[in-house]
Amino acid sequence: KDSQPLVDGTITMLIWLTIICLALQLIDGRRCVIPFHWWRPLRNTKTIIGNCTRIIAAVLSFTLLWSFTWNLGVNGSWSYKWAKSLGDDPLLWSTVVDATYNGPTMDFLRLAHAKTMDKPKDYNKETMEALAKRYKESAQATNEARANNLTDSTVVMILSESFSDPTRAPGVELTEDPMPNIHALEGTTTSGLMLSPGIGGGTANIEHQALTGLSLALFDNSMQSPYQELVPHQKTPYTFNQIWNDAYGKNGSVAFHPYFKNMYLRDSNYKKFGFSKLYSLDSKPPITHQDHIDSSPYVSDAASYQNVLDSINSNDHTQFIQLVTMQNHAPYNDFYADNQFKEADVSQLSDEEKQSIDNYAKGISLTDQETADFLNQLNAVDKPVTVIFYGDHLPGIYSTATKDKNNTLVMHETDYFIWSNQASASAGVKLDPQTAGYVSSNSFMALAAEHMNAKVSPYLEMLTQVQAQIPAISRLISSNDSWGDGSTAYLDAEGNRVKRKDLSKEANQLLNDYRLVQYDMSKGKGYLNDDGFFAVK
Image 1 (tube, one colour):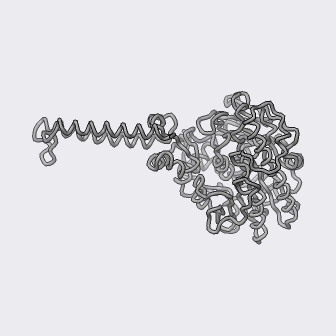
Image 2 (spheres, one colour):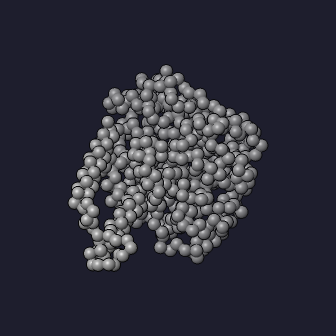
Image 3 (cartoon, one colour):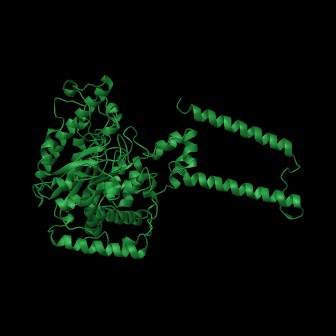
């Protein structure tokens, strides 16, 4: 039924096209209302005008089609607006779903060209060589004071689907803490709040930032999903797992996602990133542990963690392990047999909203216990392991809180921590909250290197300096819409929003360097690829 307007519009358009074609045929017949002659195009004035008319019509038709394709992926363009008026509804989290609902042609054309970012005015080879030299020298100075290498440890990067503290959402009151273990852990290890671009969606955008160090805020606002619109056009995108690949070959990194591999084109993108394998429900072989809790449709976090433990225990060298969980993904129905949060919720909200929050809180409670068990098992492993754990975004269930624009920041802040097991040199390390209290996901690897007292590449050195001056930066999607344009937010070390014009001179210089590097990595000529910018020396 949702597609009925599109079907009706298409039928109407075809009827009118048929009528127009029949009318033109009746008017024209064999008389050539628009004269044309192939072999003698200049035989008289009438033929010349007719030939020019047909050529102009062909050129205009081609130009129209080219412009439509070129601008379809650009928010606010004429073709984007026209397509939306005809019922097009971009669904960039899945090409399959987008093609199903909007048609494979629209899906293909939408992804054929996406506006990445404008070329910085000072972008050229000389500028990038000078930039690379500057950060190489800075990285060298940093590394003289650091004793370890990132590859001395296995690093597990966990994107915990929709993980956040429900009690931080305005209007939510629970008499029981749903995540006591992680709250206790946050007091003893590097931790804080992560500024997320979205609410209720956009998982792969936060994931892309964490793996690449690139920021969605620096891309053009038309760039809605780098996994869909950018990575397929890149030949050799850089990601942090490649640090371990350089040390141990392709088996230096592996990924797990207990869902389907085609979501956000993860399967093909992870191959480009250099992961030896993405294990999913439909990979060959499929991900090993797939247990569910009660009637939940998703694989539990405990099962997801077991896949990671198996990988750690079966390898004789360190790895980079990427895990994207699914346990707390929407919908938030009554999946769990014993949900104490139905009684613990004393919020003054509608019954419908409370029901979703109660079920979500139970899932978070289970994740809290499962994560504590996972870390305990890692403590028993006689190998150094560091875990980067973060929630990607809040769930889209807080309808009351999202109506208030004053809640924009808090509705974009999730929990994160960086923790090392007892076999690690960095066990028990907790970075200063002035450094780690507020972050965005693009700085996780730089923070992990600092947490681990590990040497950095010039690229990680730049990210470290950016994070020190601008702790968190993110394009914020409006609080009641998971996809669309949003303003860019800059946070200081206390989590306060800072206007761009109020940033320090040093912060603005770093931001300009960051923009140059991101352009070079995503759309530019790749000057930094052969300059040792990503290597740790």
